[in-house]
View 1 (tube, rainbow, N blue to C red):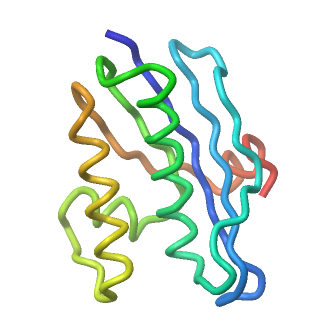
View 2 (view 1 turned 180 degrees about the vertical axis):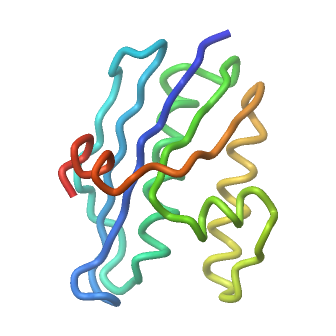
Length: 128
């Protein structure tokens, strides 16, 4: 089994506005893929962009490595973390769709965890 780490972040400027996101994918501590500032939607908000970055990271991991892996996601989005852990339910239907897509992707792996990362770590890793 492979141990994967996805460092992901998304945002908008202005908020709401055009959204973007980035992620880095590590396997066994080695960088294997980096998506940098991909444009997502023309009109979105920060929360949606955070979810999109994680979803893109998970899809990249499945495409490059496959499901025989344990995945650690590092994000600075506490609402995303709480929603994946089942502590909260997003109040907007768009966010529930993104949460469900994230959980469906996560459940394809052998296991997962979602951890809070400091913003300084995210900026160092992804540049935003």
